[in-house]
Length: 374
Image (cartoon, rainbow, N blue to C red; front, side, top):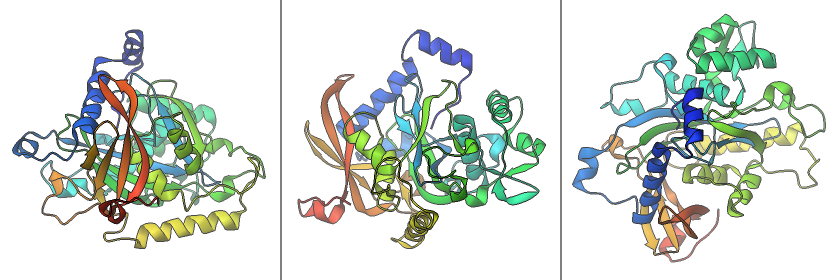
């Protein structure tokens, strides 16, 4: 997840091209894919970098589309990729347990506030409710929201104080936990990222047109961290990634693949819409699956990706069952049933083949030397 930059830092980075920190970060990602991320040795536990707490939201629109943001190429994390809105947990968001406490990697109010704050800063979408009407999201003008984003990003005022000034509170109860991700221990920059799902109100859709209500139209942050913000169906995002039109990193590709069967697009032309009953049914089925599928269920899974198989110059199989070194001995686990297939593209970047996630497979079929797409 990204560290916030000042406008001056962004301008300096842009003037000299991709920043050194971005080159360094992406180079380590390519090495992680190239050599395998499951190499466990004594140094891994002794020298591992701290996993910075962060939070991210799979934001679902009124028509069950998913929001992705296109990161600037000067970003220190996920440069040029399409990502879910999210970022670091700041001190203003709330307190966290000590560094060596496994509870630091559990869902809490601080993670939830951070997810909502970062979503607002990055997209302008405010997941907060007015004190006088706790059943609906607060409806501020575009000018009010833009002024608030700038003031919060520049740390002129804290997010919670700004909300209080507008007689609002963050809708933390509306967030649904949907996996936690711990960066592999052998990478120099690590995160402990709590993922959430949030459903925007279905009744925010205005008739049978392709536009969302104004308060639910995402906007980029002026190029500080993102150059575009857009809602598309999960299948559309995945198809674009497979056609190499956009870049998705493993967590985004994997999570979009999981929810795609539930949040399907209309079976007609681009102007078609789903009625409210169909939209609500999709959401209920997804939520039921998140809460009841697997052991542990999806809200409690913690995933630290681990390479379990590689065919030189062709592909890599990423395991998703491990929870990460910070959670050893706690019983926390990830997805023990699925794996992610990552192709090593012929395109070479920084002397290494460019990795592209292409398929979520059943682990049992891989063990039989077969593959079954979800």
